[in-house]
Length: 137
Picture 1: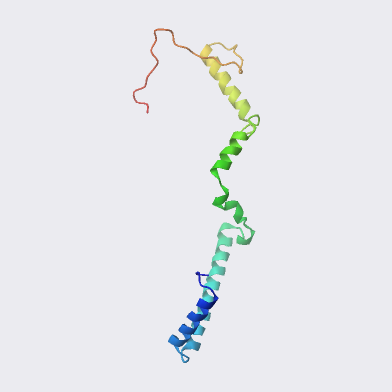
Picture 2: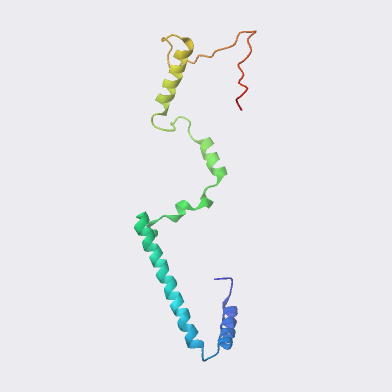
């Protein structure tokens, strides 16, 4: 607590008793006791207010889950790179991707007989200039 060890605390206590004096010592100890009681009352009031407003009990929260030290970017990237690519990001992702690529292929070819797994690439002829948008960043 505050980087004070036992002998230093004892020395500060003796100096405090000498500075305050024996006549005012009971008054100051009562004030200290009242201060500690008030701080405890405020802490329990804050705990009750959080429980009432948020709806969870602070003792039930798994604080280790919210510890920022567990988020090592190197570990997260390594796990993402070594992760199996066969599993989809979301349950509907492969069908949605196939439907979008199939719709793009149909729109690009102009016919409706292109399968969704087939990809159509439009190429410029030899003398054509690639489109350029001067307002794009």
